[in-house]
Length: 390
Ligand SMILES: [Fe+2]
Image (cartoon, rainbow, N blue to C red; front, side, top):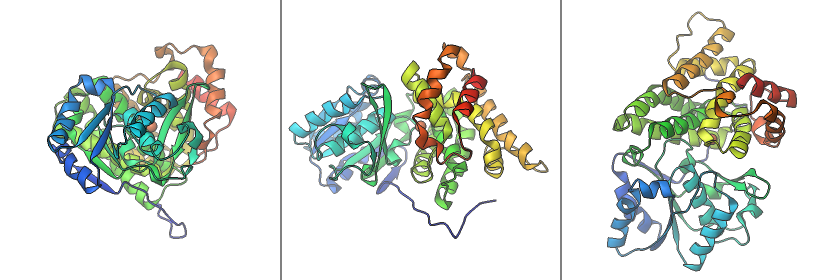
């Protein structure tokens, strides 16, 4: 039931190299040498430090004689100031390679730092598509969550702290040189972070699967990501040490990251961003809350696509009308939310009803997400979706 169109030219973007498997992070030294690095700047965050993951990754590098610097101050929803500060340190220390170790925030900052070592000014000077004039230093990204797929994507998201707005930088130069996917590094994730980040990956997969910019590559990758997440997220949530579930989630998040890099996202992200900036909700949680409500709004824009989502999530859609089949996708998402104990009601998160106007205004600023969305989105639509979610 694919919709491959021979008339449409497809592009597919991905990192130069992926390494996937249990214990693969121990091959980092070899990858650094292959890229010609000897002075390595590690970008990470306090959570990763607390989980004890930093020494396991950098000690083998030190014993190989590499010089290592560590920046471990990355915060969730990282500001441009964090990227600029880390880049200043990396530039003055003459580091020649960046390793990002952590969740999406650390990986996004690592990408920004690798670019800013070679470019002048602030990261905010390069918001938009392919805005960097110079290629940065090589970057190797190692995720410790299974969600953003930042290790596979061409985007770096930073918060403009003066405007309290999220800004996205896109470009093929932001794609990592190497992505290393080691499920061992994700087992210490607590259940709530597993759930939130896993839902971010699911939103990437569903939005790119139904996107008007989907391609044969993105359909294949997003479809498999949806299948893997629906079967493995409840296991990873309930039994954190299950290495197979962790492996499948890491693979799914990675596939979803590649899918949305070429196929685009949609209105769920557009409506989730204001919840991040106004209420400092984790990105995955705000996406999870908005997903079923945006799906219900979107269904008629791509009935066949949503029916495909239902099928990938294990729903039996035989004999159903296209509309009934597409609705099964929403049912499946609601069940998955319940399985990982995520409420999709804004009122459960202290969001005030009177704030819906402000959220709507901010969501309108994220119009780039509405371009690939299967349905056009008006201001009134956004307001109604937030009200439905309340
Ligand atoms: Fe996301």
